[in-house]
Length: 225
Image 1 (cartoon, rainbow, N blue to C red):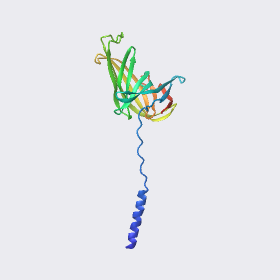
Image 2 (cartoon, rainbow, N blue to C red):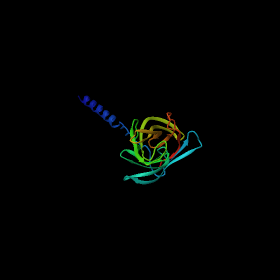
Image 3 (cartoon, one colour):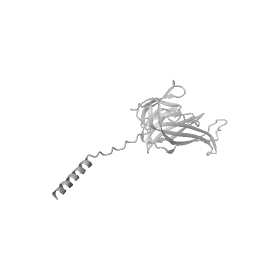
Image 4 (cartoon, rainbow, N blue to C red):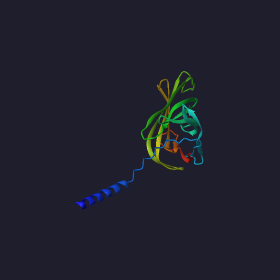
């Protein structure tokens, strides 16, 4: 009987030692925001067709927008080279953006992209309308011009650019549609694409709007504060 108790104690001690030595699983990594925002962050892009041509996107200064801390970003965030006010709120990267097409100019306020990206997300970027534009063949001053922009995360891929290899890179498809008079006439549909690697930002762009989704500009160098 004594031997039995000794054996039982030994087994219990061995099990306790094995359990106490078991390593805990590390916590999952924190998700990274789609575009890191800090004053002084910059991204340099190389033109795919002309490797000697570059453009720069930069966070210029901080400000406030709709009561939230915000940043002014100069560069190609929405297809045109201009300054866009962006800020994180309500799980989205929000923006105030000036859209220009021919002589049309509208201010669109909405969602640039979700704060944390996953494949299949769809959202309304923004919408605005304007009247009094005289553009023969397109509009006269009595027409109401409507701009509607939608975004969609179409895929998650691994992408290599001059600045390095990025996985995941989320392929975001933007479509700007221009209508007139309660959407009874479609005037134009403008497609652009962005490849976004969370924690780094936009690593490639396609501004051709054609059926072939091939980057027209790739990230060449960058600095994240």
